[in-house]
Image 1 (cartoon, rainbow, N blue to C red):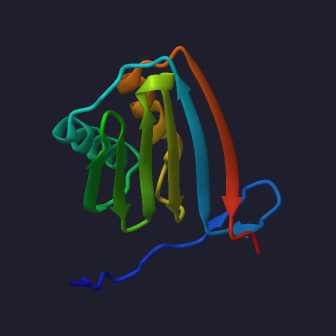
Image 2: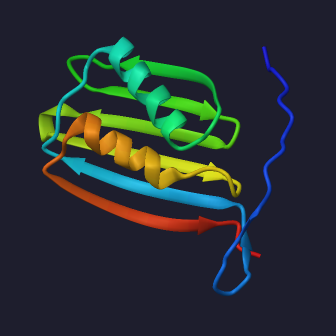
Length: 131
C-alpha cells in the first residue's frame, strides 16, 4: 500500500553563487569498520542517521544475505539513506541523499562514522538537481 506524504521541501540556495539545487547526495565507502549483521541493530543505526540529519524516516527495509552481508535502506520524506555490506571484504557502501534546505546529510555521515568506526573513509559529495 502506498501512503501519501505531503512534500514541503524547499530547494537549497547556495550562499556563494545563488544557484538552486534539490539536495546533497553523499556517496561514502567505509573500509575496515565494525561489522553489523544484526537486522534490528542496522535498523536502529539507519533511524539514528536519519534523525541526526534532521530528516523524517518513513520506513525501513533490511535484507540479510547468505552466507553474509546485509543491505538496509531508510526511506525519508527528504529522500533516502542506504547501507550495503560486504563483510568478506571488510567494506560498507553508503548513499545519503537528502533534499531541501533543512536536512544535514553530513550529520548522518558523522553518525555513521561513530557507529561503524571505519579505519578508512572515502566520500563523494554531489549537488543534485542544479538549476
